[in-house]
Amino acid sequence: MMLKERLAAEIPLWRERVRKLVKENGHVKVGEVNISQVYGGMRDVKGLVTDISYVDPVDGIRFRGYTIPELLEKLPKPEGAEMPYAGGLYYLFLIGALPSLEDAEEVEREWKARQAVPNYVFDIIRAMPPDTHPMTLFTQAVLALQSGSIFSTQYHHGLKKDEYWIPTLEDSLNLTAKLPTIATYIYRWKYKHGYFIPSNPDLDWGGNFAHMMGIPEEEYKDLSRLYFLLHSDHESGNVSAHATHLVGSSLADVYYATSSGLSGLAGPLHGLANQECLAWLLQVYNVYQGVPDREELRQFAWETLDSGRVIPGYGHAVLRKTDPRFTAQLEFGMKHMDTDDIFLLAKLVYEVVPDVLRDQGKAKDPWPNVDAISGSLQYHYGIKEFDFYTVMFGVSRALGVTANAVWARALSQPIERPKSLTTAMLEDIASKA
Ligand code: NMX
Ligand code: MLT
Image (cartoon, rainbow, N blue to C red; front, side):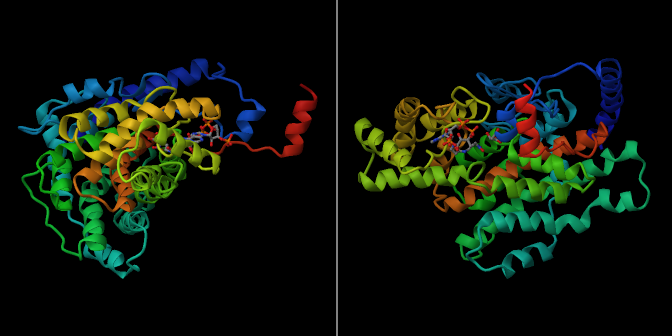
């Protein structure tokens, strides 16, 4: 397999690079931690490492050093498509260099060969009460695949530590290959009377997802490719990436680790914010029987804040500027749906809400994040079941967390175990400061 060969060439160089850095500079301080940070969700504490992506507070995400506009231009695309292959992005994550068209298509071929989902996974989904949240079904399905973990089997047969990454790569490809089928099965089972649309072998991973969703518009394939690129990775400290890494650090395999990350993604302050965001937009739309004017919108935003709720889709733990993932979706919307009311409302919110949040003075970042607009684009193509949106986020996020899992094994990252203190100890530290 090409990915395995290229990784086998890269990994020794990285091992040496990290070994040398730690041996010669292990004592060098990276930062300090204060009491606010200990109580404040470890914000800005520099305690994790990943080379796959980095979030600059102002410029936003870079994947392997490339900005989103750069990737949209440079990554290979299926013939006639506006947006790139997810397979090329996964290659970039794993190998660290831009793929050729052939490289991207080879990852896509790997996925096709591994996409069959065992029937018992569908049985598990169907056995659940129909009102189960799609994220619960999705997380369960990922966990249910665990019995097929190659890493787990080989580990129990005495796998050597420097080979851990090899079955982790196998597990990662096997898992990610199956996610479009699992996600769309959940969608069709829950919302379309169980009429499941079989995979189309001629389509790429992202395009096939769009096809299996049953959305007829050709451009929805491009929206899916874009969506999967944008949500894939956001450095290592976000809840889904960090939860995946933490669980994986115990040598739990990629299935256990990813399902933990997906459980974290299901929280309303993280991935679930996209469904909350669309719910908020629709609430505005219903109250004003259409797109309100700026003053009405400002008033509505204040009412939300005054009732002690957050404005979903706005603010970020790291970003201090409009999220470039928001901008990429805004541009897609301007091109494909610039007369759609809900999209126009999301755009108006962008023009009004940052000032409201600034006036309130609480949020450190008054700007929109990725979730502020994603739902309105899905809604335009008829995906009105917004409980489902976080599943799409999860399909995408699995690309980032599994690529990180391969590298965590390659670099023998140890079990994660930070130190905790008691309040009395912190009071004592404070009294001596
Ligand atoms: N609306 C109202 N208040 C806000 C918002 C917002 N959108 N964002 C932050 N605040 C408040 C926050 O609740 C906190 O209040 P308090 O002191 O009363 O606890 C205060 O501002 C300071 O919070 P920050 O330090 O700016 O934000 P933090 O890093 O703690 O949290 C988020 C980041 C993203 C959780 C927060 O901005 C938020 O809740 N946003 C809305 C939900 C959302 O969009 N989540 C999606 C994140 C992206 N994703 O893909 O996961
Ligand atoms: C993400 O994509 O994970 C979110 O923007 C949250 C974060 O980075 O903290």
